[in-house]
Amino acid sequence: MFGDIGALEVLAIAILGILVFGPDKLPKVIKDVSQVIRKIREFSDSAKEDIRKELGPEFKDFEFEDLNPRTFVRKQLLDNDDLGLKELRNGFDFKTEMADITDAVHGRDGSGSSGSSSSSSSETPDPYRKRDRLEPGEPPPFDSDAT
Image 1 (cartoon, rainbow, N blue to C red):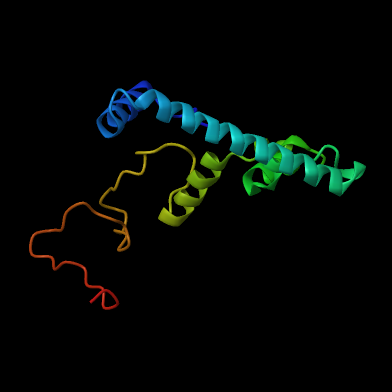
Image 2 (spheres, rainbow, N blue to C red):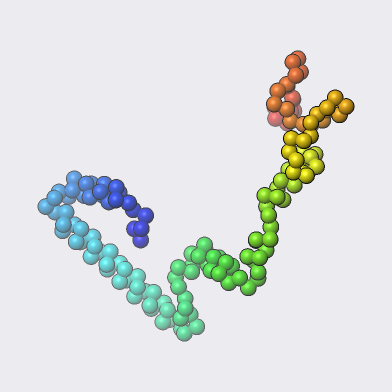
């Protein structure tokens, strides 16, 4: 329940408790709070047992943590690999797929030789090629949808 609280947080809570309740009342407050937490846990456990009894023997393996959607999906899809999802997931190489798509969009051949497409004077310039700088005197691009 409190697994993610560090030592600094515990120290801050202790100092705050001393300031609010005082050093003489603090042990009684801690005892009362721990009793309340214990009663809540007992009430929760008894309610869970009552629900399990009412559901019957078909739900003897029922865990209330399974009602959390993340836990349910993880348990149903990832633990039970009846559909072969792990093989499907491992069969895709998304980096290569995305590199091929990017090369196709930018008009590169996708042979993996980046930087080999040197622009010589015999090639016609690609008007859609993205450039870092404008030529001197060249107007900036205009996008009528953006204005």
